[in-house]
Amino acid sequence: MDVIELTERMDNSIKFLSDMYFARLYRLAAAKVGVPDYRMLVDQKLRTAGQLYEFMVHEFHQARAFVLETAVLLILIIELVLLFHGKPA
Image (cartoon, rainbow, N blue to C red; front, side, top):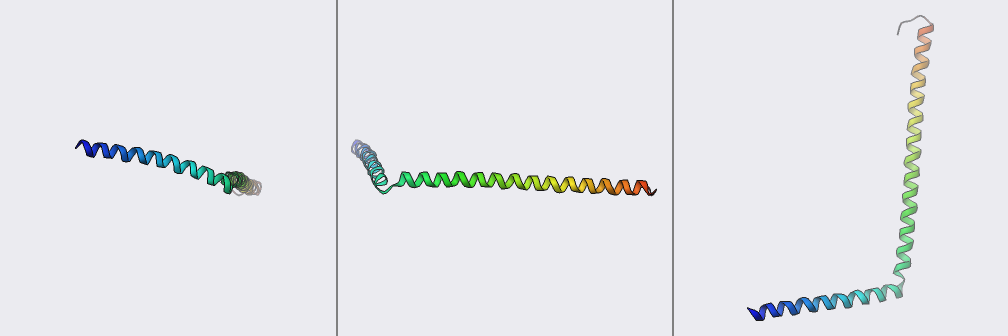
């Protein structure tokens, strides 16, 4: 039982050290290839896409508000025309 526990502890420590080694190796390889620059470009494009989306949503809300205001104005004009022609609404 003690041997199994000792073996498990050694396996876990080896996994930890190998993970640290592979993480360092990945960082070095990523720096050589230019992954941080690529990541920065992707983040910049995501920010641009987000700003474009916000602009389009804002434009949609403004267009919808314009249509609603036009509909209210049209209803008001119809009511006024009917009122002045003597027809009850």
